[in-house]
Image (cartoon, rainbow, N blue to C red; front, top):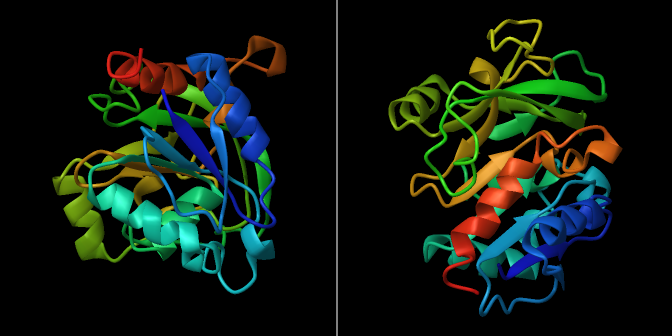
Length: 233
């Protein structure tokens, strides 16, 4: 798999993401500075978590204007695969690649803890190592992870089956208590209409090794590696 991790000023999760990608694929990703625009030959572009541009204005708003994002948007339109995690999800919404917005957490507090995610759709390149309805554990670390969209957009997302993951209890129940940041309809992750772009708020890259607390996130990276292995031996 030929992947790249975009490095914006202020982010702090790019190395975690690079480690997760390399551990699954055996090939370190290209670290792509935000002023670079050449995505030639890539299978996957990843927008990692952190605090791009210090989260001034709205989270992800300044990064969405970086030169690389014009190339990422074009890459996505051509059917390229894009993964945005935490701040990366915020950037995807600010760039208009995914609908909606990420607002302040409902409790107005930064959340840094584990959560549980229920897989809502598993027939994708990102999630086909999970099963629909499966629950896995993932860390969250954000102050602006409260997914918002108007009711018409939410209904459209549900109708098109584009909700990737929801916040749930350990048993898979969709309860207000499990929806820690107050996201609309418990949405933790979304697919684009062609299923090639995934925005996800929690951090699966920090659950890829039992020595670091668990490997619940590893199936996502293994699935990506397997998807591109036939094309890139």
